[in-house]
Structures are given as C-alpha cells and as structure tokens.
Image (cartoon, rainbow, N blue to C red; front, side):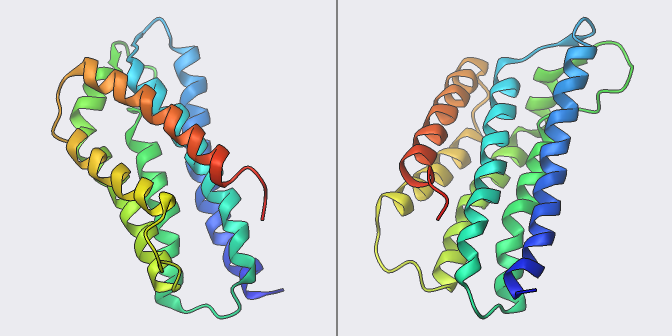
Amino acid sequence: MSQFEYLSVLVSIIVGLAVTQLLSGAARLVQLRRRIRMHAPTLLWMATLFLVDVEVWWVAFERRAVTEWHFFGFLLYLLIPVMLFLLCYLVLPDLGDEDGVDLRDNFENNRVWFFCLLAGIAAVSLAEQALRGGLVRFDADVGFRVAFATVALAMARVRSERVHAWSAAAVLLLILGYIALLFVDLR
C-alpha cells in the first residue's frame, strides 16, 4: 500500500460522512416536508456542498503523485474535508420528528460560521497548495479561490434573504463552471 492509498482512506471517510450528512438530511426534508419551512438558499447550498464534496474527493486523486508526505502538510490537506463536513452539518438543523423546523432560522443562526468556514476552505486550499510549492503564479484558479473567500466573508455580514438566495444560486453556477473548466477529467 502506498502512502497516498493509506492517507486517502481518512480523506474518503470524512468526505463520505459529509455526503452522508447531506443525503440523509435531504431524505429527511422529503419525509418531513409538511412540517418544515423550506428556504431556497439552504437547498441551493446543499446542492453546492454536495458538488464541492465530490470535487474534493475527485481532486484528491491528483495527490497520488506525491511521494513524500509530512504530518502537518497532510493535516492541512485534511482540514479541507473536515471544514466541508462542518458546513454540511451546519447547513441543516436537526431534523427530528418535531414540528415547525424553520430552515431560514437555522441559516440565519449559522450564517456567520457557515460563510467563515466556506472562506476558510478557500484559504486552506491556497495555503496547502503553497506548502506543496504549487503557488508559483497568480492564475485563474488562484484568483477564483481568492475571490470566493472574499465574497464568502462579505456574505457572513449580509442579512438579506434575497441577496442570499441570488448569491447561493450564483455560487452553484460558478462551482459548476469551475469544475467544468478545471476538473472534468480525472488526472
């Protein structure tokens, strides 16, 4: 077993837990649909987080070429799926059998943490890439992550439901474009 194969197991487990959180939450939303006040930004963020989870797992395959792993470099790399898991947990409230679950209230209660974690993922990915020596120039990929982190931090302060709905839809489309441009093929 190579170092990559060994280390990728933990990454896969954490990504799997995040996806499980989203999918089980989506199933509970369907089951409890009559008792839940739906919120468009929450549903859009669920779709976006699912795509980002899959993209993180997909891009992890690129690390197979890394021959030397160091604990703190791996810890930094592992922080990305950990933060994604936390986002997947924060995006939905506990969907027990209680009446009157309000997705908008949950979003508003977790908004600052959610968007700070989202910005943190972009920042950590840049730091991890720099640690590997991969940030030699400012390209479109780096620009996207810097802009994404900046917008996420700004959104942490915005309270307008309309702005959050439009921005969640825009981010979903941007993530789809980002993946289509950079990560369509497994490398």
